[in-house]
Image 1 (tube, rainbow, N blue to C red):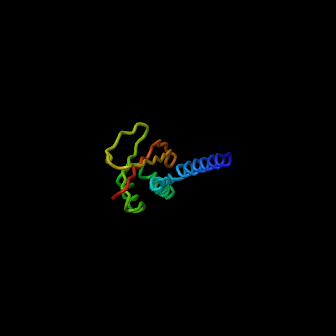
Image 2: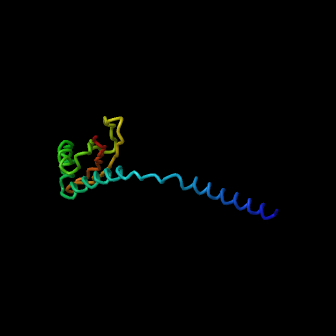
Image 3: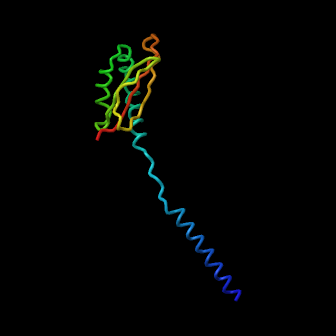
Length: 129
């Protein structure tokens, strides 16, 4: 009679272990959201590229946002829309789409040709469908 009880206990223990393993490993790991970080990195890389060529600082001095946008059009992929804002310490809110996931890249410009600027280039990026 003791053999049946021990066998029954072992079967119950194995079934508890199997049920717990199935419930733990049933949930698939979530896919990381890499697209957002890729878009943000490409925006920063585009601003860095323009800064390395000397174009960005020159346009920031003259507050030429349209010129910066035209330069970014040729650098950024076609499926990314963006809005640029050049401001100093107090930046105003700009009109952005409300139903999109928007990434913001801030690029600080300290000076240009021995002139202190203290300006910030704000680049807002989102996907185009």
